[in-house]
Length: 262
Length: 262
Image (cartoon, rainbow over all chains, first blue to last red; front, side, top):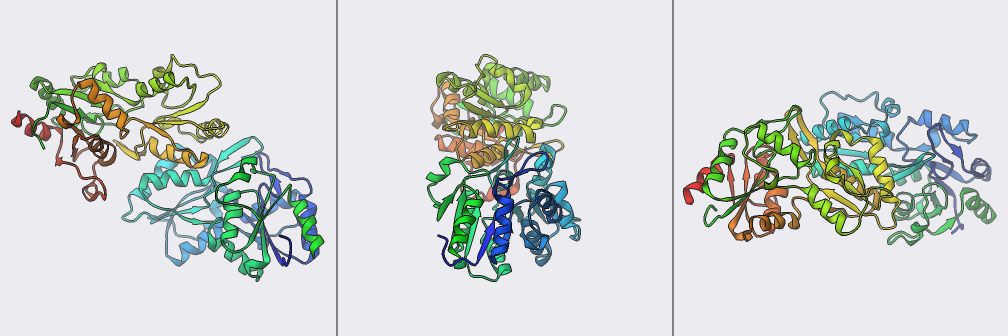
């Protein structure tokens, strides 16, 4: 799987670090692995569905853990959604994390004609869900834009429901299909490839999510590895539809193999 | 549609009364309509997916509004779920309204091996949803029992997401299919028919929910009317799959027509 590679797409949470209440902890070997990728001349994009913070804040957190990363290297759902809202003159009702709101500061939000849902975490209250629902059901043609379709993720204090679960609740209540921005949407991976300037055949995605990272990237013609860190569970290896090109114990192991091939 | 009828199944919320923060308001003519049904000799069951209160409390509320109703006349999801739990030796983790908890007082809830979800209302917090999710995902074969699959309902202060939306969130997150107790489950209507001792051909369901009341009852071989009260919306009349045997403006109108036929 490691031959003829010119660029890497790295998922962040669960690959670089394990997130938790007080920020997170780097996964052993990952800080060094990112440094080695950059030194090797391989192209690199950080592809995250993180929607609990602006990219600025997100990158700062990772830098604080020792990672060599900058805002310009991050592909994330909020800026992709922002472009869609602008293009289609949509005025969003936001059901997102407080820390993500600044990404939408420039957008007119009066008299909303769509709902944007992200991983709102503590903002997923009964009242806020009812409010987003009422905005949607009140539209002649409800428009729901979801910043990802993840089922759950792991924090240091346990598994948490991800945005996809709440998206499904609203989809069902309003009999509508959400437009998903972020992994596993094809447009999301394609924009990361365009940013690197390489075709999918020369790129590898490395992630911990069998469906959103591995399945999504493979559908774009890329190879994809699943790490056995983060939300990885042994039963992922029996997934009925998705089979990674390889498993690696962690990012460091993937980088070892890759750099031997260069 | 009114010929050869021996029994009626009445939905409650949206047919007898409109619910709201401080209890609810009878729908005009409904108190008198229930009295006339009983005087006519027609058999009668109140078939509710109400899971925000024990049947005792629920019946007391309706009596307070002037309705002639007793606990023994009510078919509701919680007692049906209780029987399933007993039969299969299931120990539930409950995600339900505080006022429903007494219906499960007799059941062993230690070391849960299933999750029971009802319309938990204010108990649908981020923390409680995550907790129910963790219990489910921790099971080798997750068992999720849902007290209904309603999408939303109307209270005096607006539309609210119903249990079905939260059920979908957990189904998606755990890749599991809930077992639905309550309307539109066939077993639920059949138990109401058994309680009346009549075959489906001689029964009519009257409800405001096109899918859960009308569609569910028709699939059991009953006739079904949709009232234009409660959560009824004009677009229900263009429903792609379900067509009521008739529309009536309200319960009183249905009873007028029925009693003329007797």
